[in-house]
Structures are given as structure tokens and as C-alpha cells.
Image 1 (tube, rainbow, N blue to C red):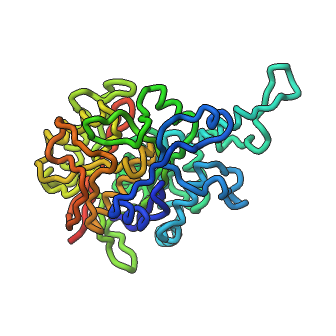
Image 2 (cartoon, rainbow, N blue to C red):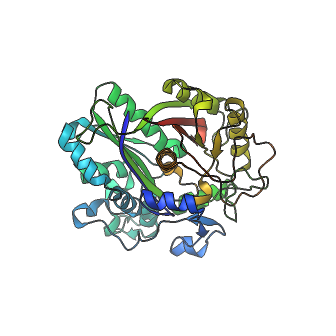
Image 3 (cartoon, rainbow, N blue to C red):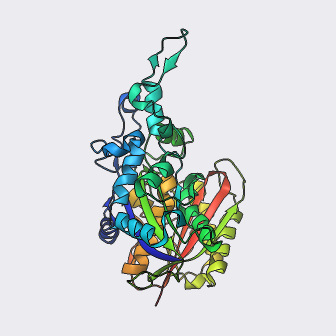
Length: 406
């Protein structure tokens, strides 16, 4: 599958160049938690977050008012970077609106707006227990998991299948696999894929309740790592059958393979032997028709929690030679949850186009349990294949292989 365009907006900035520049300069986007109002602010967690600036002051245009919320604002912001929106319109013109799918991933959609609605409930005119959402938040579409997909489909005018993938932190990696199947089956000719997740109380306090949030910037694969930093982000990519090139010729970037698995070992912990992780990586490599040693850069899920990093490191060491450059970029952006798959796929595509192979931020002493693949320092060289791992609660896993046409 050809990748015609791609973009991401994170705590590092807006668009592809902001991401590439921060990776090259080893400049992270994490800051002390300053998120939220009301109860969230009063009980603010002592942690670090990857926050996207400007969303509070940027309501959606009037024609999209029914979808207005923090999550959809970030979607709209991300859509308009790197010429992606214009590329979507050109795609719609080329194939017809019904022949382009929208496949988006999110873990919480616009639940932040729902939190606010409950916090501001007003008394109704009926029985004593009757209460209502405030008028400005009495918009049902905002309070559904499909809010993001519904908004993006309307904003772009695309009318093909519109699918929301909500598999926790693997959500916007799995969209690539879902879109590839739709295209391969002939249901559509192309797809807009991506994902958006924003910070909210459920995310911050929920992960903290699990004992997974660090009080300092996260340190993936560090010997003293003690938890993750949460972030928010949005990103998109256009997938199209490689033989349906436009006037500019075939795109150089490809989705070469994907692998998915579900080990269902535990509600929130990975399989201790990494069986699902290994299955996803092996399937992606097999579908791409390459060997593990052909991967030049491997973007790891690497959340900086003790259990997840240890399992992933063992699986990587069992499959890949020491020559592979592998790292987690969550020290730059924080863990962007349902948006992690698209953001880190963008980092893999940047590695292919620019030769920037990120190391890790904040990590200073690599865990001795890690294999030679795990790198702390950046490297810069031309590569032909890059891979991205995204793993979610419940043991649902996805690995993607991207390539560059010589």
C-alpha cells in the first residue's frame, strides 16, 4: 500500500517538520502537569505530561459546532498540517467520496467533554432526581466513541466506510491493517487513517490508580524506570493502492506489512513471555516478505513501565539481531494512548525519509536485561525498512512494517 501523505501534531509541535526537528535536536515536549480545571486542577497529579498548546482557545469553525470538544479540536488542527487536508480533497476527487474509507483510532474519544457535562449537570423540571447536561454540552454525538470518526468524515466529505478502532494503545496502529484489508478486498480504493487522543481526568487519574504514572519524565528501558508520562496527539496518513498513482507518480513510502495478535493474558499486564508481541512482529515481517535483520529502525511501544518494557525487550532480543536500532520515543511526546500508533508510525516514516533514528530521552542507564538492539543515543543513516510496535491493554498487539522504494 502506498502512503501518499502523513502528518502528526504532538507536544513537540504541529506537523512533520516539528516532529523531525525535535527528534534530531533531542528536544522533548514533556512538562510538569498543568492540565485541567475545577476538580482536576484542585487534585492535580504530580507528574509530567505531553500537552498540545492552543486547543482551549481554538473552537471548531461554526459549521462544525456540534462536534466541538478538545479531542475534535486536535483532530481539526492535525488535519490541516503538511497539506494533508488538500491531499484528502484531491483523493476524494480522484476516486469519488464513496471509494475512500475513514479508519481512525482512539482510546477515549471525547470523554473529556462527557466528564465536563457530568460535572456541570443541572437540575431538571421533573422528579427530584432529574438532572440534565448543560445546554452547551447537550450534544449526543460528542458523547460517543465514534465522535472523532463522525466529525472527520463530515469535515472531509468522505463517504466510504467510517470505522472507529478502539483497542486502547494499539488503536491507531491497527487502523493501517484495517484499511489495508478494505483496500485489498476492493471495498475502497484508498483510506484516510489516523488517530487522536487528548488528556482528560479519566486518563490521568485512571492510569495513576493503576500505579503506572511516574512523578518524573518517563525513562523507557532505563534500569530505574518507574512509570509512564501521559501525552496527547493527533495524526493522519493517506493509504492508497500502489498501482493507483496520481499525476506526481508513485509515492516512495509503503505500508509493507502488518501483524496483529491478541494474547488476552490479563486486563492490563502483558503476557510475561511476550507471546502475543512476538506473534505480531513475526506476522508483520512475514507479510512484508523480509527478515528481522532487514529492519533499520524499530520504534518500540516502550511505555517506561517496568513490566511492559521488560517483556518487549525480551521479545525484541529473541527475534532481531543486535544490529537493529530500536528505541522508544515516548520520552519526547509522552504516551499518547490511542494516538501512539499513528504518531510513532510518523516517526518511523521520518526515519525512512530523513534517516533520523531516534534514541531515547531521559533514559541514562540502559536496563541490563535489554538486548543490544535497545539504543539510548540517536543515529543518522539511510534505511530501507522501519517498524513500529503498538500494544494495548488486554494483550491486543499490532506491529507495522514500512518501506521506502529505492
